[in-house]
Amino acid sequence: PAASSPLRPCTLVDNKACMDERQRKACVMLEDMIKKWASSYARAVELAPGAQQSRELKFVALFSKPSKEEPIAWPIVRVKFTVPDDFEGVAHPRVTYTLEGERMVFDVTTDLGRRFKESWLDRIVMDKRAVRADMAIMDRTRKA
Image 1: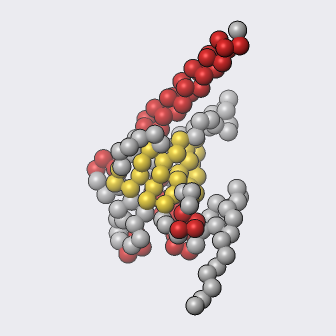
Image 2 (image 1 turned 45 degrees about the horizontal axis):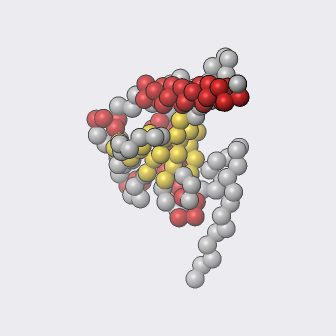
């Protein structure tokens, strides 16, 4: 039996370093697909936890909205993707995704899945900021 190639660690500079060739191709396809989704957001795609070992085509896209006041933006919104194994042989692969904190699974081959809305990311960002503000208020009242 042929020895499997050793797993390589991902790096901040090259998040594809730890991917096998098939995962790399799927990642590039996802990056190309989502670059039009939310023009005011920076984005990065990486393997989902456990996908390096399992060789699954599962990814997480990290979206953040930088500004002059906050060039390294918080919070980050995670969108989980699953790419079908046969994505290379299909004109429009049935990629599915789920927004952070949501249960609904979108399919890019349907009208709703194709119509990704930047406002979905904005809502999650506002929710996270509100939770952080609430926690800060609770912390101040505990210390008082």
